[in-house]
Image (tube, rainbow, N blue to C red; front, side):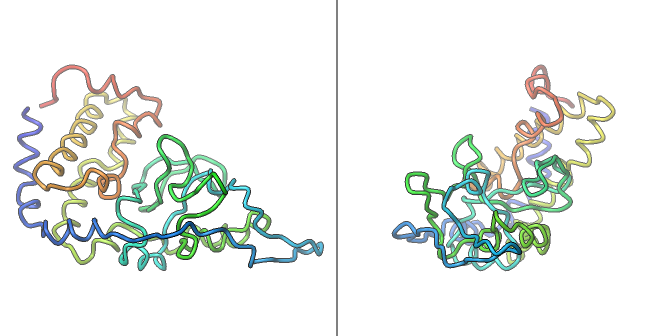
Length: 257
């Protein structure tokens, strides 16, 4: 209870300063997607051996996960073609699997990605029944340049000019202050240090703090639950497993004081 109370007073001013009506309208922008957009075979290339390459609509890339967004994709979010509820944030310092390089890595900055379907890795906008894309006409740049038969373009560009939460929240200083407050208290730098020291009490505090912060955002900030993973990244209670720690170990007993 102490943890929740101290968090409430620490963040109360931030929530009170938020332009709630403006923000809620912004995240609830609706877009009529219309008919499913089919993949195209318009991009046909010839490799060094004279073999033509084109998308065969096998769906492999789409089943491996949604794309990360880049600065040039910002209008897609601003215009509501990709909604805030459709994306989530991999936060700086978070351990992740690098799909392009095929190995575990640590995020060096925000990575904004399109969500997956349910508990799978399949891109939210992939329609498996006919291997089509629900947003093909306005697909993000990574989808436009990805050619599985010639991966050079995506390997060069995928880590450049990534879109960040600050880019999307720049017009809402109160909301950006809230995001910064969460990140400063629940950073992966702090998590990594505690894991290395075996500081289970400290990790328990961070996991609980993160959960209470999200609950406060729902109750006091009246935010939509679907946008929390964009604002604050995935819950620590989920990502702590990547360090080989069972979150249940951190949630038993009394709240740390």
